Image (cartoon, rainbow, N blue to C red; front, side):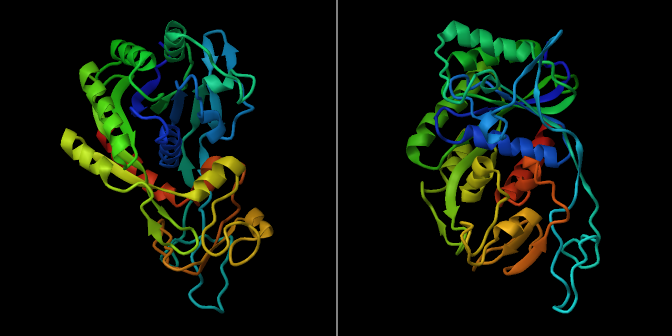
Amino acid sequence: MGLDKVKNILLVLSGKGGVGKSSITTQLALALSLAGHSTGILDIDLTGPSIPRLLGLEDAKIKQAPGGWLPVQVHPAQSLVPVSAPPPPNEDEAIDPLKPQDAKIGTTLSARPIGALYAISLGFLLPSRDSAVVWRGPKKTAMVRQFLTDVMWPELEYLLIDTPPGTSDEHISLAETLLQHTTPPTTPPHLAGAIVVTTPQAVSISDVRKELSFCRKVGIGVLGVVENMSGYVCECCGAETDLFQKGGGRVMAEEFGVRFLGAVPVDGQWGVLVEEGKRPRYGGDVSGDGGEGWSDEEDERGVEVLGGKGLVDGRNGLDNDIVRKSIEPNDELLVDKYRNCSLCTIFEGIARELVGLCR
């Protein structure tokens, strides 16, 4: 079976469309990779494959090998330089770009090893993003099973499976195939469980509850619930607004007796990263048209100015108006630029919790 080298399989589910399952899957994969784990993404949303676009790999294609399909490599295992250094102890002392430091002055940061990331999606087989997939149930079922059996994954610690909304053919085929071929935690591949994604409003919660019921009926354990689009924090002033209410996911998790993994706010800079490939920036003018934000020249050098009231760098606790300089950033890698996103800290916490649950 194609999953023989996969240690842990995690499903990303939701009974509701448009809640951001693909975005959650992508960011969890990036966070697991940043933690040093070899990770894969299997996109079985056959009629709406979003993973290639989120990864910036729409031009990539799946390669055929004698034993099956080879997944697309997003990035290999390697070491990343630290994202930034702290401000100097005083205004007269300059930052040495060759000696990155932690939030505590004088503590030198070492290069950060990351795990390899791979992906497979029907989007890699389509001629363009506008190509429609018009398949009946049996064809979709066969495609899901082929993805599970014919992909030659390398050694992976975690495989995230991005699913379509609902509880229809793809889900039934996925559950049956995984339950037939997975094993207890001691022997790979192990079906660790499902991550259920919702948004806070009641109309979404009512549909996502059906997904929790589906997991119970087919015998798939639920690792926890993630509440996506849980508030919006202004990139300039730091004011928070509950666009779609807040807290519904936590209440639902408590009612079903499952873990609440976290709340993820809306971050416009995540959209800028995946749509334009630009490193996230916060504070002042984030449009790139001038003001207190980055200039284009600063963006190319990886220089970030954190300004604006109420903004705090969650990765190292530094307060406002701090100039942080990246040390030779690799701007070719999505995972490197993602470290500057405010959501990175949230997903690193969720990833740590999931790793603990899988052990």
